[in-house]
Amino acid sequence: MSGLRESLTLPAPERGERGLEGRWTRLALRVVEAGPILILLLLAAAMTALSPFFLTGRNLTNLGFQTSIVAVLALGQLLVILTRGIDLSVGAVVALSGVLGGIVAGAPIADGAGGGLAVIAAMGLAGLAVGAANGLILVKGRVMNPFIVTLGTLSIVRGLALVISDAETVTGLPAAVGTLGTGKLGPVPVPAVLVVALAALAWVLLARTQWGRWIYAVGGNPEGARRMGIPVDRVLMSVYVLCGLAAGIAGLLVAGRTNAGSPNAGQLLELDAITAVIIGGASFFGGRGSVANVVAGALIIGVIRNGLNLLDVTPFWQLVAIGSLVIVSLELDVLRGHLERRLKVGRAEASS
Image (cartoon, rainbow, N blue to C red; front, side):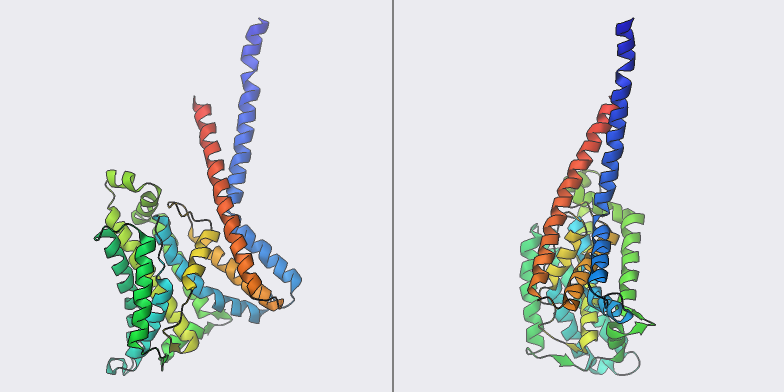
């Protein structure tokens, strides 16, 4: 009887321990997944304590202007990274779209009331064209190395911007472009409103449409996605086209802020965009990432730079701080994978 009692009573504590461990693992996983937002809140609290100017209306408005360009680029870059890709050409697209906008602004087609729309359309189409070229080379050319392909288009696009502008800054953009780059709706910068709209659109597409589920599936397991009948080539084409469009919109914001299109604009912005995505918790191995965390990643970069400027710290420390955050974010990704594996093992043991 004692042996029977032991056999009946011993498994219960074990099950309880496993259940408790599972709850703690799930809690830890949620904390890690919310890591970018928590880091942003901690940074904002630290900067508020260190500088009385951080939470002023004027500074927050400046932060909105400064962060919006990287945020727009990061939203486009997220789509590509979710499919295990990368787009290094976006900074050059910023330059090309600005230059083309300036050239169109000086052409007869831009005369009249629709001139601003013609310029804006030209800048967006420039981004779409480069994104489509990247996608076509990868998909139709079967050159499945996005790093090398987009590194090549980076050079081509930057060279085109220099050639068509004769390496000169093009000025005379219409007022509509300036409004998008420097305008405000009350105290809120227009570029920040645009970021919110684009982020909401990206969230709906990724979380509420079949196309969004396909993106995650292609990034998680490309061969498995093909066997399931998912149109992998079309998904890849679409994300590079949309990433190019995001770069064209970022070029519009840059040109609006300076009222000019410069062939040297956008240098190293591709690195800021990729950094924002990685700080935001997306994985280079694809299939993992969220819109909210990527926007948080862009804000983290903006808060670091803005806060260190307010504290009169040399800009070189900005590079150290942002690089350290990238490494921390990669470690969080490793920890997230470990926690997910523990949860799967726990569920398998519980069901066996």
